[in-house]
Image 1: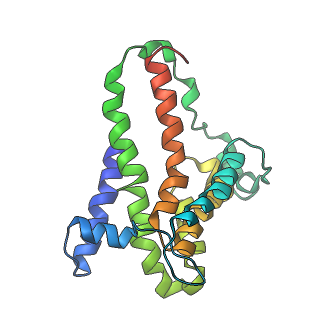
Image 2: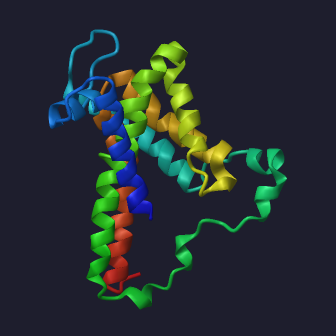
Amino acid sequence: MVILGLVWQFILSLMILKHDGNPLNWDTIRDRMRYQKPRDPKTGKENNWLLLWVIPFILISVLLQGGFIWLPNIDGILFPLIKHLPLYDLSALNPTDFKGAWWLLCFLVPTLIFNYFLGEEFLYRGILLPKMNGAFGKYDWFANGVLFGLYHLHKPQIIISTALLFGFVFAFPAKRFQSGWMTVIIHGLEGVLATIMVLGVILGKS
């Protein structure tokens, strides 16, 4: 169901592009997602060295996910009822049940592609972020982060706090450096970790 939802985001993105009068081909996707060298915000020149700016954003992401950056319990204060909802916790799965289950890669690979490359990122940073500029101006990345946080309804305990901050971590560099690769790298780090974990389970290492 998760994969189908991510694929639907890709299809929806193509429908929006078609509605806007764009040809449906790889060039359109590349141009809209800005799969290009990052641009210097001051000079407008492309420079691969600007990719190094992903490092501080990755560190912020790691610190947030690792709980090293303390966040106030905004969600619990504003929505007391969500404190009693079950947590989204994959660690409850028993790794021994999936030792040698290489078929899990059939679910992992499309999830990675449509989450970090053609689905979630394409819709939020490639389609919505440019459109939001017309309504929110220079704060389009902020609005994009808010929308991205609210999109995480499957993790209600972190919608306002962590999820919103992740939205900013992903949306701001994409806007700042005019390149989708910035966000794909930052957001895609989760996919790298997920791949390591899944391979560990398959190999019986975790």
